[in-house]
Amino acid sequence: MDMVIDVTAAIISKADKVLAARRRPGIHLAGYWEFPGGKLELGETPRECLLRELAEEFSITVNIGAFVGESVYDYGTKIVRLLAYQVEHVTGDFQLSDHDEIRWLSLNELDALKWAPADVSLIEQYKAHVSTSAYYDRNAQNYCNETLNFDMGELYKSFFENLTTGAHILDLGCGSGRDSRAFLNNGYRITALDSNSAVAVYAEQVIGQPVVVTHFQELAFTDEFDAIWACASLLHCTRQQMPSVLNRIANALKNGGIVYMSFKWGDDETIDERGRFYSNYTDVTLDGLLSKIANLETMDIWDVTKPLRDGEQKWVNALVKKVASKM
Image 1: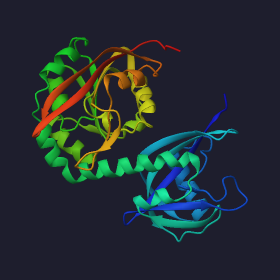
Image 2: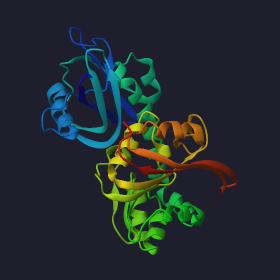
Image 3: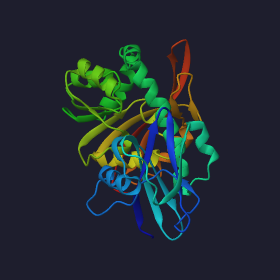
């Protein structure tokens, strides 16, 4: 199997526009547009790589923000894994070396360009990231207030039946802190995590302990948790991102550990009336996704319809266990 080369990609934005750079004649993929970046050097982190590459390619300084997503593409002669980050331009006028043109484009204008194949999926991942993050940035308080007191007792019961006393739970996408609070009250140890800093501040007040702020695509725990609770949180990951996120979840679990996850019922990716991105699954498509993750074994998949605001929402739920590799 060909070696996978890790390459960074900078999604540089200003005034609601994103920078696209066209590769100059005489180099690989000449004439194609890309999010600029470069290959990681030995011992370099992706963020360090972007700082170096953008200084070398454009003579600019930047701040590296949130992780957006990854894209793996087989060019035939090599397999490239692009790791994309939001980037803020700080100082310096753009000086072109590997590129012959740059453009600042709105999200809707990005699709009109001829993109390097590895970059194509990053556009959709970025759109999903922007729309969903913007909602939670604007509405963190209202969202947390709305969800804090939902009755989750029935789901807790089936989850607790698979835990030992004092188990360590990762509340992945803790939101308001509702579930972490319930787990603490039942004697479990909790690590609460959310990708939105404003939501995390609210949850910290509810549970009385720090909340880790990071994106699911950057989970870096190893054999640490007895269980992971991902209630209506993974559904904001794109289908492109889901296998990588599930592998990170499996890596974070101890052997024999369990995961609860839930998704809105459906067969597609959607944007709701509030601007939030969703990956929707049915029992069949979720089972198919989970069957491809080497260390996860499905214990149960079930659907349920629950009241939601002024209507009802059908959900698909799964309980999964970490086992020895199926490969």
